[in-house]
Image 1 (tube, rainbow, N blue to C red):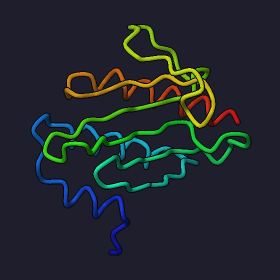
Image 2: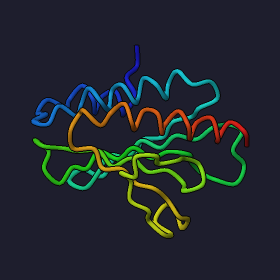
Image 3: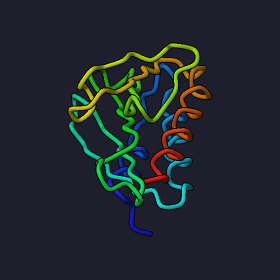
Image 4: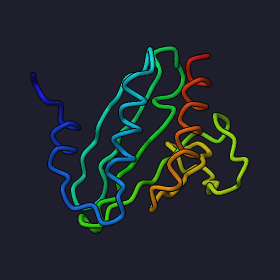
Length: 135
């Protein structure tokens, strides 16, 4: 089996003080299981590793979710998960509204430094994916 760049990255991710790697793997698995979702992986070692998800029905946007692994401290990475502001809700008000911050459009970004926040973000991924599937 040929390994993709993202699979190689995950396989080489050994130091994980905060326990974020399993969360990222769960998000990756979820996105891979969604029908019509295409994934792109952008590597910037020392800065971030960015998983970008787009639905095939989307015509005007290049993604619906961006899951960034922040790599400023490779032994203690954390996630920044961003969505377009009109594609998700934030009922617990834990995200940061970033005007013009997601490819020039308003977005919500959620920082995940502890694995306990994963279910909330997983729900936001599902929500954004459903919105993207609408086209």
